[in-house]
Image (cartoon, rainbow over all chains, first blue to last red):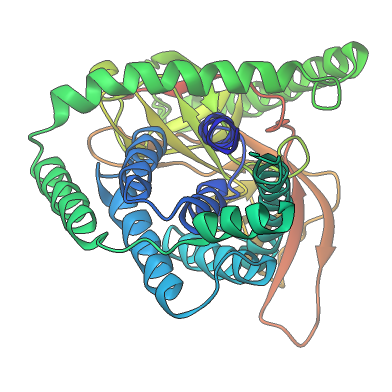
Length: 140
Length: 277
């Protein structure tokens, strides 16, 4: 169920990249990293980055590398802190978005990062509630 | 019992993943390889092929979004807007013809480009902070290097300047719109007062000498900035009209706020001003 939600969010991220500058891909990577903790997150980062490079006319691989390194940093934090919390999702999405928006020269960096962090929390809450309801079903 | 199952599930769910380093290095290596090949131009055929696919997704999203009721304008407002653009184009044409006549009669020559080639391009993406509300600073069009587009070419809708081409790929181009903070060029008012247009979120005409007279309602036109190869912003394109003038006696220059007649949010087609000879 959570995998389906993440796939849907990925498709949403791809679709809205044509109409908004809010980097939903950052929020998606944070959620995928903290929930699944699997190495395919790096491939997701590279894939998303390649798509964004193609649509935003950037050198291929540039955004992919940025997103992969961001996912790596999240994984490093995951070794030291509890990452499956709203606070971690908010802070990491916010700072990740600030860096991303600053790097690619967008306007209203902090406001966009804040909105992105809020939307990431919302999505995180939805996925985690689905996961918990799935896990709480007694397997007796 | 139920509590124990919940606890076990949570533990499994929370388990920490180790050994992600090899995957990270593989992805980073792939990323660096792709980036290097891309920077050296070895991936052009592949990116050109992939762009076709991604531009379909981009275009479809953009079209669907433009059809949403809160984005698309009322039909009557749209018609009035188009009528307004037509009338302004006529005024700009009239001004240009008047000057041409004057130049011809005075010097028997005119500098105005003798031939203009416009290339129609569809907008496939227009990223803005809040879609449908914020004015986009960048537009993505479905024409690129294959259509002979070059960086710096002006993009227009009727006689109104939309922006200039800022990036190109095989099939796509990015257009920096006039309201973009990165955009700056020389402009003149209807009465020939010269200043500099700056995006800065809202359009402004700055660096206008205090001694010059500018007033609200005046049209602002491009002064013309075409290089030797014929690429650039041609003269007499409408940028907008002055809505307010900021003039302080202590300042060296005065500035004016400008309102563009182009509705960047509802724009779906533009024309690229190709090489002029």
